[in-house]
Image (tube, rainbow, N blue to C red; front, side, top):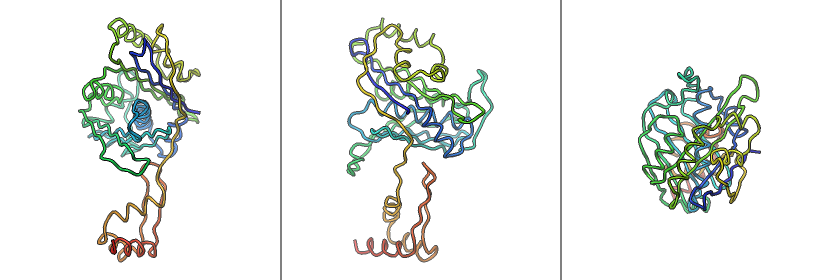
Length: 298
């Protein structure tokens, strides 16, 4: 079971969120047939969304979206309060050789563009309030750096973000995946900040310790060093899509009478594929006729 925990340290002046998401990322790889570089890119973004979503009390859907000009074409990752994660890259097979450090060249695959964070409240209740959208220019495309930059510039919260995905050549292909978010809250003193920065700088690679069996609590303590961590909550995280036949019909209804009539006359039905999970939904000619009747009378 993949798990996320959140808590505080240093007399509640430091917030820490940590997650192990190996199984979740593995499921996404198999679902989308991702290349190694695309796996690292989407895996990091999914983990980042889960970490940031865990800090939000008033929002019940958080989406990280990268609109970029690199080979991967863009990334979308969505997190919900029940631990459900879903996401996709626009070009699943985009791949690049390792960079100079022997790591996945996620930055090269992402390229330049804009890093968005979208928060929606009331979504699960069907309220569909106007979302809050924040954005910053993509800095490195490595995801963790960009999320930390967003938090510093858009929300004025000094943060450290570590995200990692480790692959291997045999099934299961994802050897380890996880991340940790450390945020300095009001009252954090410079000594604590320096201690954490030094600990992170000298800590082993995140995926190495996860691969050796470390859980979220171990990761949180890894970045805090001697500073005591106080866990406040935990949740299971998993891949789960929110699509359905009913939502496919709702999307068709939103197109308007002219478009629905065109589907009915020209195509004798409709077919939709979910970008998040690749599920296919078919709407018959009779169902389209019923939809057209409903929206024409509205």
